[in-house]
Image (cartoon, rainbow, N blue to C red; front, side, top):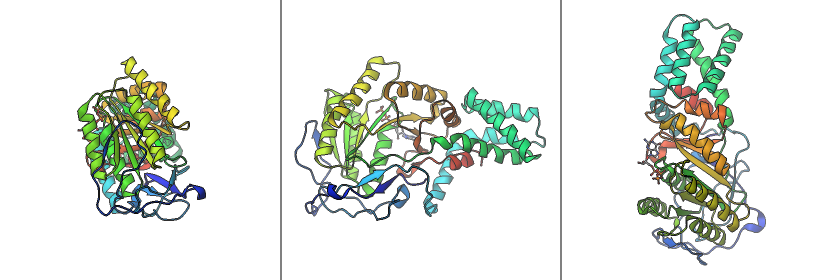
Length: 387
Ligand SMILES: Nc1nc2c(ncn2[C@@H]2O[C@H](COP(=O)(O)OP(=O)(O)OP(=O)(O)O)[C@@H](O)[C@H]2O)c(=O)[nH]1
C-alpha cells in the first residue's frame, strides 16, 4: 500500500516509435492554451522511486530517453500488496507522521494513563475524540466498537485499551485506503479541486515530481486563469521537473483544460494534471465553473476525467468534511488528498470522513517538503495517532 501507483504493461499495439532524446535538458515550456501539434522535449528524471509505486505485473520502469515516451499504463491497485519496501524512507515517514499527529494524538492518549476502565474513561475518550474533530457519528461508532473489543478480549488495563482503539480506528479508516488510479487510459486525466490555500498546487507539484522521477510524462494544466501567482507556482514545479505546462492568462479555465487534455492525447502523455483555482463551496458560480471544467474535459476525452480529487486542509477539521460533502455533490469525487496534518489538533477528521463520506484518501501531507506527502495507510495513521 506504500506505492503511489502501480504499473501495467502497455497494450502491445500502443507502443509507438519514439525519437531520440535531446542531449540537454530543456526548461519546461510554458505553452499558451491552444492545441499544439508537436511535442516538446521532456527529459526524463532520475530512475523510479520505487517507494511511490509498484509493478504488479512484473517488468521494471522503462528507462525512457525519448521525447515522446512509449505508452505506459498505470492502474490502481485493487487491493494493497505490501512490497518489501518498508525501508528507511517509510520509517522516516512514520516518524514525521507521528510528529505531525502529536497534537491530535496526545489528548487522546492521556485518556489511557489511568488505572481503571470505567465510564469516566469512556467519557474522557468521547471528549477527546470530539475535540479532535472526529465528529459525533464516528465518535459514537468508535466508542461502541471499542467497548465491544474490550469486552471480547476481557481487557482490564487502560493501556491495552489504547491498542484496541488503534484497531477500531484502523478498521474504520480501512475503506479509505486506495491507490491513485493511473493508467488504463492515455493520458490519465486527473482534475484537482479544493478551497483556496488547501494545498492543491503543492500537492500537484509533489505528485508531478514522483511521476517524473518514475519516467512518466506529465502535462500540467494551469486552469487557474485568474491568479498569476498560481500559474507561476505551477510553472515552477513544471520547470523543476521539466514537464510541460499549458497556461493562459485570463480566459476560460475550461478551455485551458480542454486544450491540455487534447494536447496530452496528441502527445501521448501518461498523465495530465489539471490544477483548478481555489473556491468555496458557497460560491455557487465557481462551483458551476468546476462542473463545466469537468464536462469540457470529457468532451476532449470521452473517458476523462479519470480522477477528480479534492484537496482538503486537515487543519480545518469538520469544515473539511463539509467541503468533502459539497465538492462530492458537485463533482462526484474519486479521491482525496488531505494536507497539513502536521501540527493539527483535528486529525480525527479522517475518521469523520470514513464514517460519513468514505471517499478514498490517496495521499496525506504532513509538511511542505516533497517527502511530506505520502500514500495513506489506515494502520500507519492509527498507530501514528495513538503512538
Ligand atoms: N504545513 C503544511 N503546509 C502545507 C502542506 N501542503 C501545502 N502546504 C502549504 O500551504 C500553502 C498553500 O498551498 P498551495 O499549494 O498554494 O495551495 P492551493 O490550494 O494551490 O492554493 P490556491 O491556489 O490559492 O487555491 C503553501 O504555503 C504550502 O506550502 C502540508 O501538508 N503541511
